[in-house]
Amino acid sequence: MEIMYLMIFLSLLMAIGFLFAFIWFIRSGQQDDLITPGMRILNEDKKTNN
Image 1 (cartoon, rainbow, N blue to C red):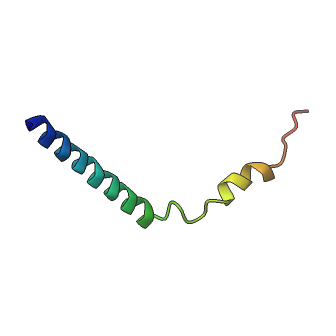
Image 2: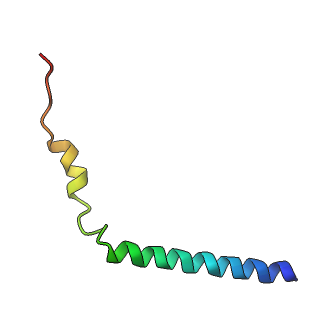
């Protein structure tokens, strides 16, 4: 039965860790512009080696 308490504690600890990571992700602005990085590679000029 003690292992169940340990597993519940560890799962809650992991959930809180993911919650803090999600809050940090939102506040740091990493999701502000999701389109431009994907389009940047399509708009790069082709380099030619002569």
